[in-house]
Image (cartoon, rainbow over all chains, first blue to last red; front, side, top):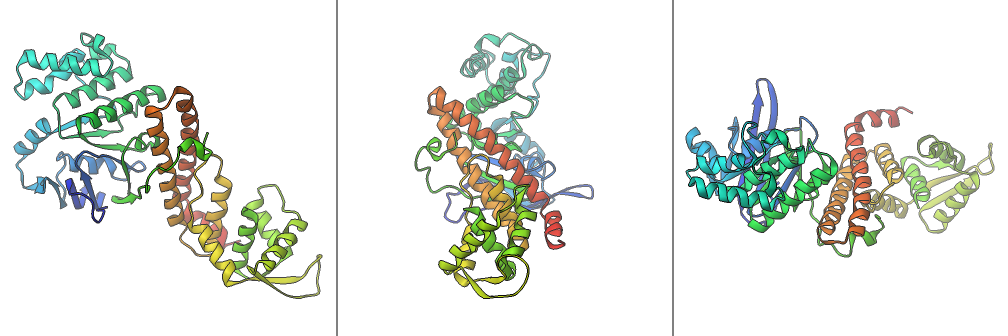
Amino acid sequence: MNTPGASAGLIEARSVHKAFGPTPALRGASVTVRAGEILALMGPSGSGKSTLLHCLAGIYVPDQGEVLLDRQPLNAMTEAQRTRLRRTAFGFVFQFGQLVPELTAADNVALPLLLSRTQRKVAYQTAAAWLDKLGIGGKGGNRTGELSGGEAQRVAVARALALAPRVIFADEPTGSLDSLAGEKVMDLLTGLAREQGTTVVIVTHDARVAAYADRVAMVRDGQVSPVDQPPAAASSALAKGVS
Amino acid sequence: MTVPLTLLGLLEREPSHGYDLKRDYDEFFGRGKQLPFGQVYATLGRLARDGKVSGGDSEPGAGPDRKRYAITDVGRAEVDAWLAEPVEPEPHLQTVLFAKVTLALMLGKPASGYLDMQRAAHIRRMQELTALKRTGPLVDVLLADHALFHLEADLRWIDLTSARLAELAEVVRNR
């Protein structure tokens, strides 16, 4: 779904194919992610949207086609280079947080900073600051198992943002949360990402989550199609009779 | 507004009598509420007056009017424009969407394309409402929430209908 005349993509998938055994997950998927935008990839279960996200993030290597970051193909990198890229330039938020349960919230947020050789004191100061921004400053000493689902997801968002990544990949980030907790997580994730100028790619089957994005694309049968953008939101949406 | 356009759409399929139009309308679009004969003939009269249908000579037979109606180019253009225009995204619009999808299948038009356009219109409205929630007062947030949940329900219906189009096409064609 390359838009003619659009600004150059930060990440581009070009005719990506990916199969798991005999089952094709992606069949020529192409999408451009522009720098600083929030892009939602929507689609039903099994449409290939999570596989596409994993390809964009360099976790999966396409069977055919290529993924480019700053016009450089990820396929050409070694696994070690891709791992370093994921650790330094990308942040991840998954449906169930994937936090380390034995560690505290602060430990979880500080961990990727420590892995990228940030000084321990700085790492924990940064972690504390992000937990504050996420509204859970008082929970830094709690093990993640002691947190509610919504709080744990906020820790995951803090962990993703703490490294000041260029791109955050979020796979069903509110899938395990109730409406209010999910809304809080999306408000914080998209609000802070916009504030930081961080690019975000969200995979979701939930239209209310996709509605937080600047742009929405549909993934169906392993291919991507755009959902056209509005000319400009004219008058108040509430005035259009949707209340 | 849907009844005249639906009757026009049925006439695009084939020229028909008022009696047969009512029967088809009730079967596909009535949903337990039959269209009164009076409304059928009044609507056909208005459509003929506006040049959207042409009525031939009366034919002998059962029923109050055996005039055979055919759609004109003006009427055909109106049906095409109506089908191609996404419905204003607002709650409770399934009846209109259902009529459009069913008619599109009857006429061999791209029903999945219409559903895609409707999905896009819904998502745009949801983006507007979500943006409004970021800055609006709580009362507007609550009203936007209400609208968002209903639009989400519509979207689920659109997705499910997209997945069932082939099945629905069989039903429509085999009647």
